[in-house]
Image (tube, rainbow, N blue to C red; front, side, top):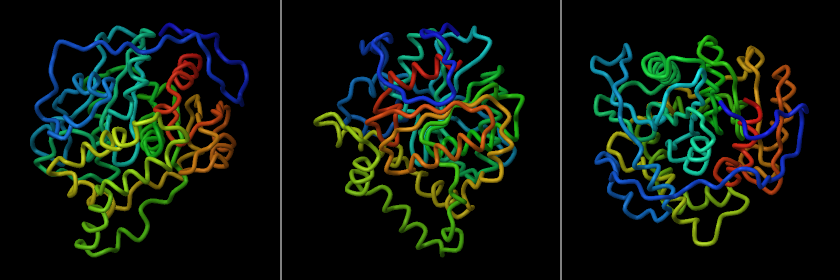
Length: 327
């Protein structure tokens, strides 16, 4: 993949904006929105979200626990002629639209980029209600990789997506050439007492995640700087997949299964690793960035000033510069 910047020689840096990377184009594509997206997508005003949403498609992925292939949502590259692919994995209870500002920049740089939805979240068709535990999520990602990507990945995981990436890279090292963690949530030991809750209480708890005021509050915590007038729109983007009829069941299933506990796997990571963190992260303290840097031998740490938990949304140009330089 063609880098835009000279590779970094340092292993621990404070990253600042650079004018070298062009802004993503926001031209309107000829196609319309996929019919499987919830009707609430019409409330979203951000043109970059809408343009990326037009690219979402469902592809069949077969896993052992379900008889029929799962029609799995993702954003595919326009061309697949690189020796290596960059695969973007979103965080907890989110979707591939989390990459709305970074994905176009990767494409402009000539990168073969995929944005995939973790099984149980995003916009896949889960009418068959497959198990959405860690092992099934791992198998689903592997089968998607083996069936469609078919080449080494630079696996990029944001927040809980970093735990997905750790779990996957340790179990399938042949599929992952490099790792990039963004605001990594990897030191939480699963979902805790949620595994012991009666089902009706678990459903009540999960339904709270869907409530707009709570989502608005979470957005305020997640970002250091939200552009004026964007808070409600960004919240609707993060909430969109929750309107699918199987979201509740899939999320309860994940929470009651125990969730991700990759603490013991972190030191087993052998791939070259880039760690990106917002210095003002109020969700996962930057102290964990230093811990992760120390736990993964030879890793590179980039701290982004004046930035919160999701740098790929808040500071996409810096994130892409670092990924391209790292790769």
